[in-house]
Length: 262
Ligand code: CAO
Image (cartoon, rainbow, N blue to C red; front, side):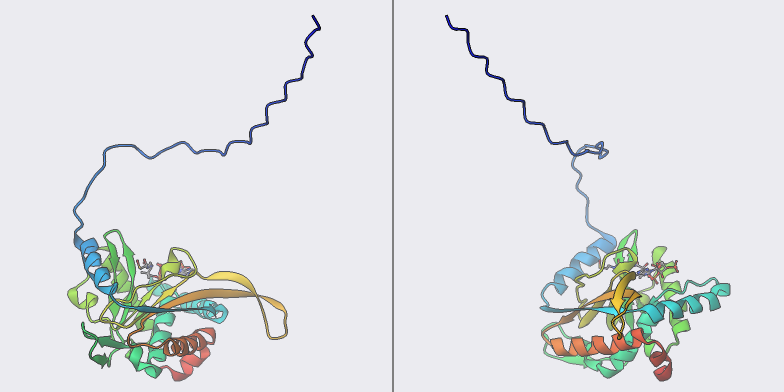
């Protein structure tokens, strides 16, 4: 019989290299159900209430190069006090100064959204990340505080907040909020307005990025992004945008803040 033709067996296709799977370190145990309580329970209530508010979102980027330099000087000047001097005191003050021109953003609405109250004090709430969860104490009367006084109060709130010992007064009466999520990371966010307030801003992380100057040259620039959310039942998008432009102008050229500072 004719000898069988030997057909070469095709080479097995070469397997693609497997992705490196890190050793699983998650302990596989039993499912666990916990009661939601304390700060987390308060968040369930406030966020459920907040969810009924239609939000308008507005984002922009801020050139904070001059602010970074100013803050370095402020930090050096106050180093002997042992106080932390971050960007927040300047950002909080700029917020209050811009609110002077847009009082509708420092306001509260009632549950049915039938009345809006323009609030005299600028009590700026600061979202704080603690072991217990999210808390939002506020710096009272920012309109009449210096940047230094804001820094001191922010330090106090942060220290007492981390100890879980904030008073009811510290935690109530906020009229506008800021969330410095950029301290953890990220650029843009989608913050949720805390009723009865009507607006909130989330700050992204400070980054060094290339940008063009007026002559078209690339320059090293410090950039921070901001994401605003506003209660669209009472706040128009144009109002939020105009407010943001004023706030941005103060932060991009902090000298203008010192001119108008009270
Ligand atoms: N980008 C880059 N660096 C930042 C930054 C940012 N957006 N914000 C703060 N930093 C820097 C500070 O300047 C400081 O630097 P130095 O060590 O050089 O002084 C350092 O990070 C630590 O700052 P801080 O976080 O202790 O202080 P802060 O005043 O800037 O912020 C607080 C205080 C309480 C707002 C912040 O610690 C915090 O908890 N952020 C999280 C807020 C949050 O969880 N938001 C989400 C709410 S919705 O769930």
